[in-house]
Length: 165
Image (cartoon, rainbow, N blue to C red; front, side, top):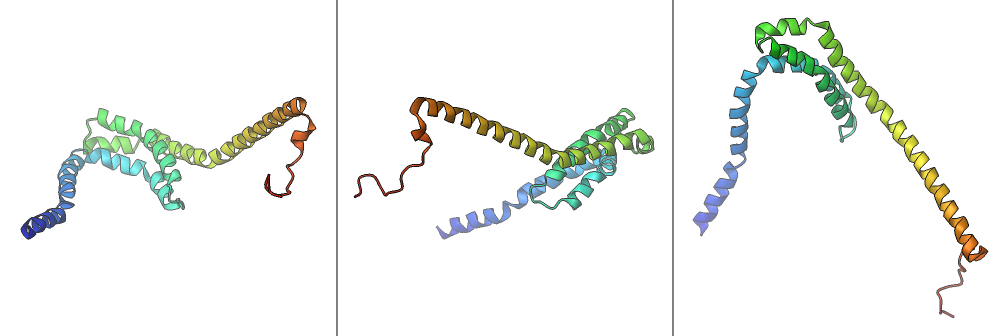
């Protein structure tokens, strides 16, 4: 029995290494195969790194917003690299293309704008929705007064619990 517990303990001790070994045995060849693409993406995605450094909350809303927009803006450069053969020789024209930089960094700027403009827009929407809800409640209250009379507008008596006395 003790030997089985030792084997289980030994298996648990080596288990965390298996996913790591699998990760590195898959990641390194893939990274080597796509190194030109990863180079272009790393340079084009620098605004996302800046958003990561500037982020103060744990939810990373800024990083996600800027990162996704920046990635979308970086895709034309990646497509241009792939159409050129996805080699180190094809990196030069891609990195010298001012339009590609403009698209990638402008998309990141749009991500910043979305992050900055969404809270006031959502707050305005919530304010209007709550005001509309209050108006509907007042309308329903007027209908109740018509049906039941003014007694429904008076607060209940605070003389204690019913039946006590």
